[in-house]
Image 1: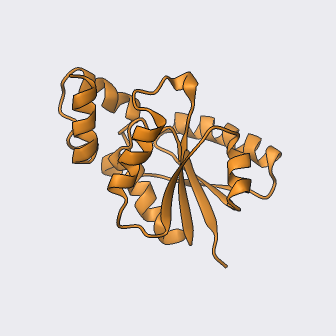
Image 2: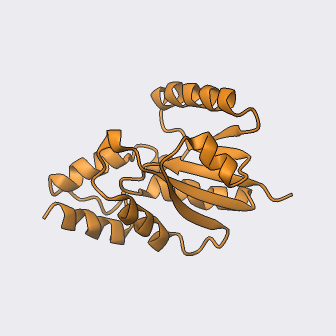
Length: 159
């Protein structure tokens, strides 16, 4: 049975930590959808189209993985694509508390969805999109946090 999993997020921008989870999840599930959320409350630096294009440009090695934007409830997006799993990344204990609440709400909204947590590799566990954007804004070196195309896109945004 081919299981579809959704890895949702804002991905503003996609980081090496995100890519680590995508690479590992693509081996665990028959189909992996990277769901890029509109999330206007976060006031993203990159447009939805730019975030999708950046992710697509760095996941070419995973033929069972696709990238899609969405602006509805995650459980509705999952149902539209017959997903059985929501994949979430955990970096810290505080991530767990927030993610645990989200998982319970999603489970209440759709009992057919399971939330699976993955932790990024140790060398990527501290990376966040927020920190990466701030370091880039202040002209710091982000080359170990993101792929080169993402680094270049951030430099262009802040130039």
